[in-house]
Length: 88
Image (cartoon, rainbow, N blue to C red; front, side, top):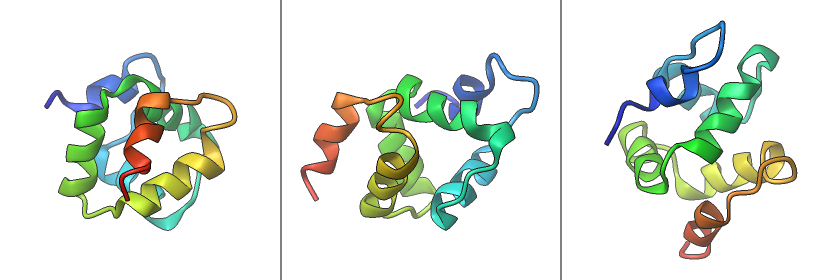
């Protein structure tokens, strides 16, 4: 697994830690300055790495799906990730 923090921070002024990203997902919240990082997580990080991330930070798949559906899907759909959600 590559470092998710590198992928989601590559082009942005304000870096986000994996811990902070996991906290936003767990609480179902968005901080505007991290919105591009969130989009990068759901679109640029390979699905196997996303699955490893949610296991590492104890994020249920359903919670990830809800976050993706609420904040990301309409703007940046990720079919490969959506396929994973069908295996609940």
